[in-house]
Length: 135
Figure (cartoon, rainbow, N blue to C red):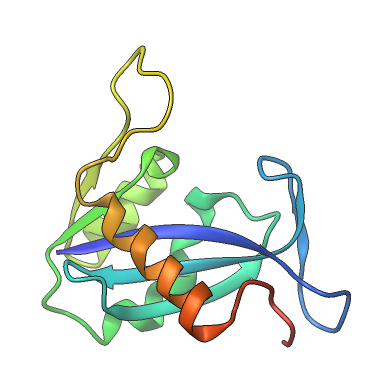
């Protein structure tokens, strides 16, 4: 089982691709992560922040090929597009979208999604990667 998610981070105005994420109101880059059920990093890719979440999956192609035994992909509501389901099936994975219940207000922990959020927290805290400083 794998969990896939994205995180937008600010970046300094230096070399490299960057863009404006309108949802987060931030100029920077987007990290696309593929983690296992324990939160271990299997693959990560960096794309400009202006790329929609559903369009970031091809950036993980090389990383996914290194882990052919993964059979289930858990994604959030931003990955409901048909192309995301096609990408998962192309790589031999079942596509499962975990989303909030209709009418739910405020914060809620979604099943298995907290694992990738914890991994992003580790990256930010222990790696000192709150902001992207280099290419």
